[in-house]
Length: 199
Image (cartoon, rainbow, N blue to C red; front, side, top):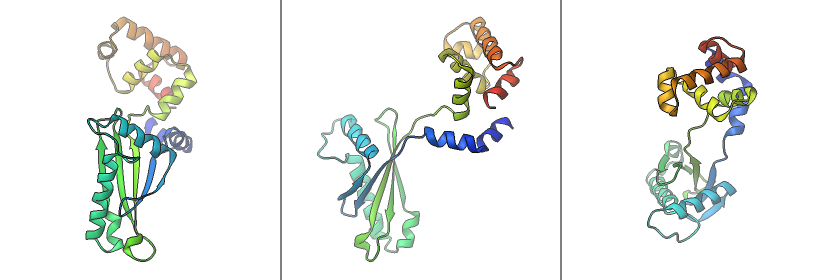
């Protein structure tokens, strides 16, 4: 109940939006000519070109982006009605990167004939993000990196023994960390501690 209320608050939404990285955005013609590339897309494309296993980059756009744009263009030619393009949304995951990258492609109708249609490709990293509420709690209570790790394990519902195994520390050390967390959050129970972390 507490986590649900926190997720719906305007402060949570604002903090979550500020923590997100801007996606890379590319706009191309149906023939694959690059019309627009934002700064983030330039950096992500360069990273993909450098990390691409066994392929030499021949230009600005990585082969995955070129291939995705061709697939979208092919589908746009098949679906001649612009209204059918609303469902045209292709995805690719570049898992040779760390963290992996998600490529999403869309067909955009143009003003007039089909030749003026455009292809938009968005590039976004796939990374697990620390929940914003947890991040704010860590800052608010001045948690150490080890304190953060223990708090994350508590949120996952792990026992002291499971936390000790996961973090490579003794159960006694886990108990001491939990006691420090309770002291910092002015709580006496695990439930109270979790409530403070998500408050």
